Length: 438
Image (cartoon, rainbow, N blue to C red; front, side, top):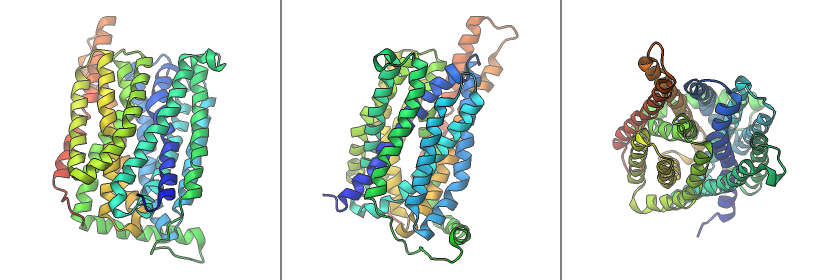
């Protein structure tokens, strides 16, 4: 029985809220719409590189902001205020995608980047609330429960959005393109509404580092910078935390790259976008119970072992993905990813929360999220640039249409294969992290 049941449910509802963006926008419709509508007429590998660039720029910005924001929030006990600001900024930017016209890929990337900043920025403070609402013996389960709620919420709205695009006339919508645009609006409303539960049901934790200052927010910034420098020195001297963050940097890059680029990859291989969207639905509804089960697995079998299991599953997925030729294989991979995706995210978060001082949670989670976002700078860019380089190396002087298509697929497969480097590096570093707490 959970000791802070109402707070835990309110906290988990934020995952229910913002996962609509992760599913419908980041993983689902944005890559498809970007390639077919906003990058209309562009080469498939070029559009992949553009999408990778957009993800990377947004991730760079939030990575640079994350640790400082966390330090400020810890000193001022204003985690929820920051969460609210970033969450509603993300929702407003998502709604703004409705206004972007066909072929205007630069504006689409610009707005999408700010939506990602809102999404990722709010997650820093959402994650940092975990130690405040869950007891130590509950933390693996609560973290998994949050991700499970996210898969459920993201999946439910995504199902409605998919039906809107497949049968627009049933919803009184003129065409599939208009349905996708309306889906962006629905995500913004869903995100904004279900964020109210964390606002109303989760109290703002008071930390030992909370201070009152006559200089207001400027004083908090100055104190936050000082505290950030102090925390960085501590992390460098705490080998266990440092190694875990480095390992996390690599393997979560692989996870996030697959989340953001899988649909684009499938389209580059010639799969129908409808089949790819269905595969994302499979991930959501398999991921809902799997994330909760992984939370229990972490308690029973050990968190680090369970993370290793997830990394191994992802390596298998990438290897198979480089060779797949049939849509049925994409569905099977979707089931396998759904079994592991929420688990590796939830257990990484709960494992890290055990290693850090609870009164500095936002600050330490700022570093945690910073490394995750710095990793995502490299992942999509690595995938896109590898594809472009392989294509350039293989392209003959006057290629036929068949050669263009064949070389493009080889380049795309090389791009996804490059992601294996990230999982292998993360696994090797995680091996040197001690199981016990620091």
